[in-house]
Length: 247
Ligand code: SAM
Ligand code: CA
Image (cartoon, rainbow, N blue to C red; front, side, top):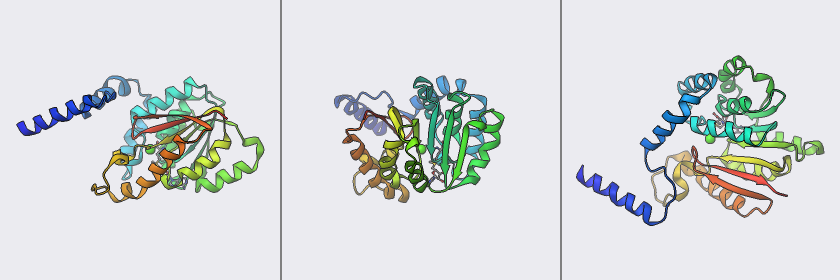
């Protein structure tokens, strides 16, 4: 126990030495955020959807409640109206978006799996926001290619949330940059990829984490070098990188 305590102290000291500005130094602190400011303000529908999703075998895929709260606030701040989501699962981030945008706002939502979306749909309907959602089942890339063919879709999206197959993020970016408006935002989710972006080559990573890691690293480099956007990588959830189109 003592050795463990000492080890923790050394780590904390090192943490400060390198001028680390993140305040989130423990699981307890994360729990504090959830219990103090997220759960008490979570809309009833989002709570219900979170609880239904928690029982699903792939629940690890869901957006966390603090990230849902962040997205909801962000969308209101930028007055988003025309939005897109790639990667819906049971719809937690979708519901956070649908609740944030105005009554005549739109979300073009894509996922290869409709069954999981249908699990959350009754809750989304009960919340009175389903009319804002245009769900399309299938792989996102060909759908984006179709959208791009029509010039009127260019520069038409205020916000696009990307939370699907990480090995396609770069391909999505090539298309989304034309679809988002100048001044609009693209949010790429999971850009810290379980912390694996800084894992040593021989680290014992789960198979899927290891497989997608290089794609996430490649994306992070590519968007950091893209002059068409300003970026901000936030350690919310599993990391979300906001890209604001500037040209
Ligand atoms: N945003 C969701 C939420 O808040 O719960 C989580 C999305 S989950 C991490 C990733 C989703 O991407 C899965 O539902 C999966 O079916 C979907 N997906 C995977 N490959 C895809 C593709 N090529 N096109 C569209 N969706 C895809
Ligand atoms: Ca995610």
